[in-house]
Image 1 (cartoon, rainbow, N blue to C red):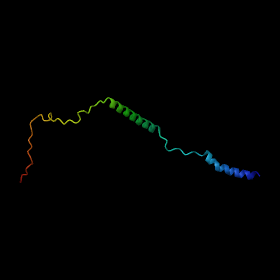
Image 2 (cartoon, rainbow, N blue to C red):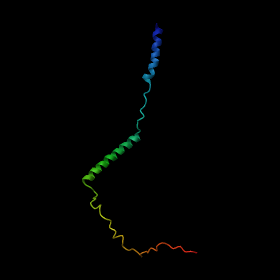
Image 3 (cartoon, helix red, strand yellow):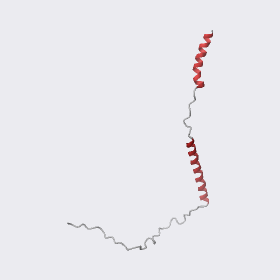
Image 4 (cartoon, rainbow, N blue to C red):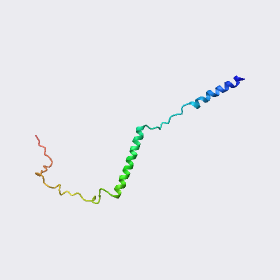
Length: 95
C-alpha cells in the first residue's frame, strides 16, 4: 500500500518542483545605472529649457523689431585701396 501512494506522490513532486523552484525569467527591460542617469539628465535639460522659454516669453532678451530692415551696404562701398578693373574675357593668342 505504501508503494501505491509513494510512486504517484514522487512523480507529482518531480513534475511540480521545477515550476515552484525554477527561476523566473528576468525582464530584459532592466536599464543600467548609466542609462537611468542619462535619461534623468535629458529630462532635466528639457525642464530647464522649458523654464528658460517661459522666462524669455515674459522678458525677451532679444528684440526682433528691426528684423525686416534692408541691408545697409553703404559702409561696404568705402574705398580701402586702389580700385581693380576687370580686364574682361581673356584673349587667346595664336602661336
